[in-house]
Image (tube, rainbow, N blue to C red; front, side, top):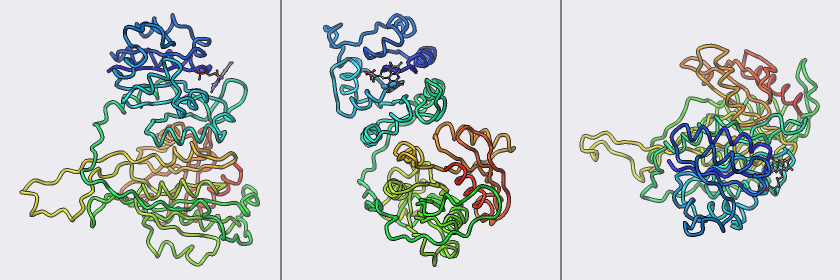
Length: 441
Ligand SMILES: Cc1cc2nc3c(=O)[nH]c(=O)nc-3n(C[C@H](O)[C@H](O)[C@H](O)COP(=O)(O)O)c2cc1C
C-alpha cells in the first residue's frame, strides 16, 4: 500500500518515527510529509532514512513530478500523526500553502488523524468544532488518549501509541469498500434535543447510604442511555442484542433520587422495565431504535449534560442495504440471502470528542472473558481507546449480564485503576456507579 504520513509540529512527532518504521516494516511504500514546524522537532534526514524516500515540505520542490498533488492522488491512505490544533484548523479551512495541505486536498483516499495537544487546546470550542466538521467529512480520528502530556500535566490530548495507530490503519485498509445501498435510505429524522433538559424538574435528594458524598449530584443534568439498539434488515426484522435496559434504567432512577435531572435515551426498553421511572418527573424518557437514532439523540442532548452515562449496548454494525419490503423465501430461488454489514459510528468516541469542559463521561463495556483479569484487561484497552472518565466493566455471557436482575460491575477510573467492585441487584450496582461519579466530580 502507498501510505502518506503527514507529521505536524508537536513533541509527539518523535513517536511518528516509530509509526513510519512500523509501516515500512509491514512492506508499505511510505512518503513522509512534515510541516515546516514538524522539522523543528524531528529533522528531514530521520524521515528520509526511515521512509527510504525523499522528504519535502514545500510545493516548490520536485515541481516536474507535480508532487503537490501526485502524492495525494497515489495514496491509499493519508495519516496525519501527530495532528496539531493548527493543522486541524488548516484542514477544516482547506488551506493549501504547503505540501501537506495540497496533498490532503488532492487525495480521494481515507484520511486518518491522530491529534496531540494539551487538554485545553483539545477542549477549546474552536478545536472541537473543527473536529466535528472533519468527522462529518469522513475523516477518521484515532485518539487522543487521556494520559501524561508534555509537561507535568495529564488529561485528554496525548497522541495514541504508534502500535495502536498502525493497527487501526491496517484494519481500515483491510475493510472492504463500503457498499452503497442501491436505494438511498432515509436518514433518521433529526431530533432536536439540544434543550432536552429544559423543563425537567429535579427532586429532593434522598442520598445513598455510605460511600462518597453524593450531594454534588443535586441539580446536575444527567444524560443516560439504556437498552440495546436494533439495526433493521427489512421492515419486520432486525439485528439486535439481549440488553434489557434494566441497568441503564436503574442508573437513571438512582440519579433522579439523588436530585439530578435525567434524560434517558431508551433503546428498545420494555414498558415493564421503564415502569421504574415512568412516573418520575425528574426523568425524561426519549425512545430510540437504531444506533443512528441513538447517535443523533445522544449528540444533541449531550450539549446540555453535566454527566453522560452510556449504558446502552450499541450495535457495532448495521445492514448496508435495508430491504424496502420483507425479504421472502420464495423470492430467493433457494439461495439464502447475504447480508452486507457496515460499521456504525462510535457514539462514545464522538461524545468524548465533543465533550464540553467539565463534562464527565462514563462508558460501559460488556465483555465475554474467561477470567476477571482478562475482563479488566479488555476494559482497560477500551478505556485507552475511548478516553472516558469512568468505565463500568461487566461480564456478559449466555447466563449473565444481559436480561438478568443482578449484575457485577468493575468500575475503572481514567487511569485504569479499579475504584469499585460491586455485585448485587442492578439498583445496587447503579448506586455504586453514582458514588464513583460523585467522587469523580
Ligand atoms: C515545544 C512545543 C511543543 C508543541 N506541541 C504542540 C502539540 O503537541 N500540539 C499542538 O497542537 N501544538 C503544539 N505546539 C504548537 C505548534 O508547534 C504550533 O501551533 C505550530 O504552528 C504548528 O504548526 P503545524 O501544524 O503546521 O505543524 C508546540 C510548540 C512547541 C514550541
